[in-house]
Length: 590
Image (cartoon, rainbow, N blue to C red; front, top):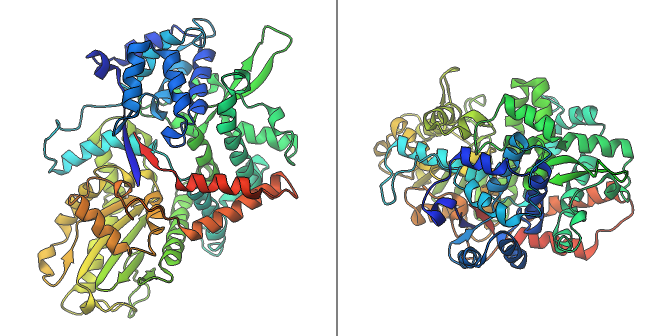
């Protein structure tokens, strides 16, 4: 279950909202390097990628650094409240870093030596993320436009919530290797991992190993040492001395995941969709920095600005490189790879349970006709599913234009108007009509329509947008238009469900105790409009369950990475215990 939290804002503390221009003026008073250093120190110091209460002592120390007693005590009280009220969050620090890259120079106040002058900047940054689109508190959400407004406000919240690291890496690895390799005979095949290796000189295992080792380097041990040894913060090339990777490959790796402030500023000047657009840090989660240039002891290092964007490079690095080369062909291929991954995920989760999983169901009379991407049957209940790998554009997600975002969602998850093709919602509606129509229903092996009493329609997205607050009821407004439930009096057809793949991965861990239809019914019973996402549902009454297939795949991947970096080294029980802790931690959306 994802635990929800809110963040402290300047407006709530001082009764007025800070403008972006005011925030830029305040940040511009400081030197760029000191602002970036301070942001990176907070990111690592409180382990911002992890559960927020993992280092409460560090949180309290930062509050004392930035604020006087009155505000400090207020924020400590908020930290222990329910829901938690947090001062630090990913969007806030990345926005401050982005504005420093754009507006600060090499001169100005040193933020590290003037922390109490910097404290209000942290609050002011949190005033910048809202568009004022959500109806007033207590107002009833009813129309498609209402839900589009909510999604536009909340899509960035979903993107900066905490993912399961083991699932994230395992999914990326499996899609780039096993499930891509199974498609080698496909005319749309793209060797995504191979193209990345040709461009960087790094095998996928080397790239993954260095990603994970750098992430681990910015872990709790470094966080504990920063107070007394702040100079340890930047990553240096010397930190790679013990791994069995040659220097030229290390340099290629660092070049592929880092950017200089000047290069990042140049890209931002070309395209930046506002406060919520943090795309630049997806591309460059590490920032290159020179230190002590005026001394003979000058050195070069890298600041970690976001661990989860950095870890996501395991998949996004190879994918976006291939996308530049192959465009539409790659996107079509990636959809087929994603379908294979989700089918295996569901097959493994349903094995040994009371559920039957049917991948790629097709008409018995016409095998060229696919009914949908997958079906789960349990007793008298059926789940019809569509999997969507489409990525959504930055200008529609972050600009605050809810009409534009709604149009793109419709185009990718309902109906592609340009190609005049059914997508997601319409595909599932057509599947219901095909299976349950009275005159000559479509015959599908493994399905007895007469035995089904309850139907669930479920879309799973690779893009995190599928788990955004309001997405399911927004899409359901289209289902109402294209499927008349009253035409099927013997069936109970629930409203349309939508989640992202990370939420489904988490839910599959409970398939030994609950079937997928039971989980979806729990979601409906807890929130009949389905406005709250699947991740907010308390499946299993706080009894944590993990997906054993993904756990096994992650263990194998981890050992493979270790073998590449440290030949002959056994990661041992200490690392196994750390991995288990990552699996069991709660997730925060804020």
